[in-house]
Picture 1: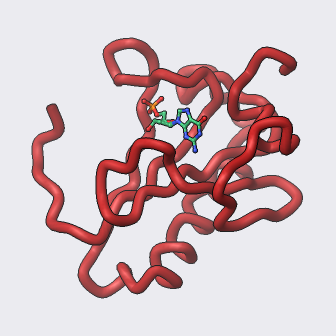
Picture 2: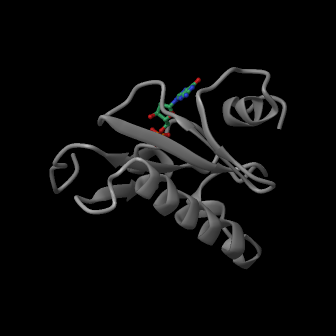
Length: 114
Ligand code: DGP
């Protein structure tokens, strides 16, 4: 997708602070961190949102979660805990139209979300 911000990050047209990359998944630090550790884990293939997911996306979605857990372990957050967030659509607070899983940790997180 030529006009997608996160596709441009995956292709390197827009710089990012990369944390992890494989054939399917890219992870990078959020530009506006909401916690001491705030990483976005995204599929390299353009998927607009959680609302657009189909059965064909099951494997890559599982991969996003596994990569997030691995990053959490590497950042030393596995014992104290962390949060995975997937915002979808306007009411869900999604501001970038490319599926992304937030990994947040390094502080006590409040609940419920705003
Ligand atoms: P959401 O609101 O769930 O759609 O989250 C989008 C996140 O993307 C938000 O936390 C800020 C982050 N973000 C937006 N633009 C950029 C960017 O250019 N670089 C990086 N690293 N993060 C971005």
